[in-house]
Amino acid sequence: MTHTIEQTRKRAEADAKTFGYFLVNDAELLQGLMEGLKINEDRYGYPSCPCRLASGEFSFDRDIICPCDYRDPDVAEYGTCYCRLYVNKDIYEGKKELPSVPERRPIAKQARAFQAASTPKPAQKKENEPPAAEEREELVELIPKLWYCKQCGYVVFREDPPYVCPICKAKKEMFTEIKTKVKFFS
Ligand code: SF4
Image 1: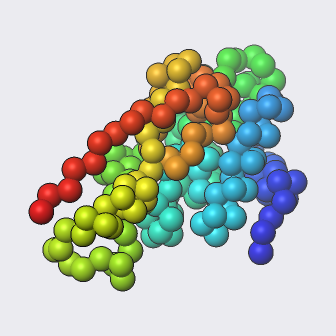
Image 2: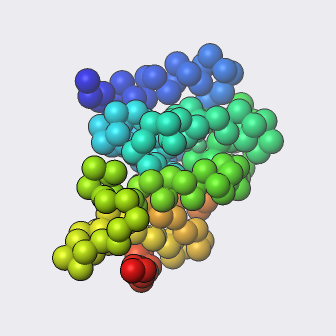
């Protein structure tokens, strides 16, 4: 079942209310995050964080399904979650500025998601066998692209640039792709 953006928003609002949080008081940022959540839900079947790379495997992405495992400690420490979707009362009312939040997700989980997202499914791959030359081009296309925010320098692996930069709120047009080289060992 696919959700509309309005349903995605209502769900987030209900969740915010339950925990005494608010949704960010910035219509443009909020809309971008809602769109990102909806697209991820349509793509993976669950609303993974719009600011992070998802692997597409539920067991690997469980901690970043919105609201992610890191929201509560981030709101407690910074007043907002990593994406700046959920905020506390002071930030919602403009008494405090919306800060940038450092990534709390362990690097090992980020690396695992990247590896899973860039590795062909087992059925497509023969164990311990390097990809045939004709398969390499296809494999390179499976590896998420590396995106760079020209406004603040934030870097992230994703298929597409983030809808909104989680650090400086720049729109996705401010992201540029960093070309990476992939080496296959045989
Ligand atoms: S950082 Fe915020 S928007 Fe992203 S998954 Fe966590 S709670 Fe949701």
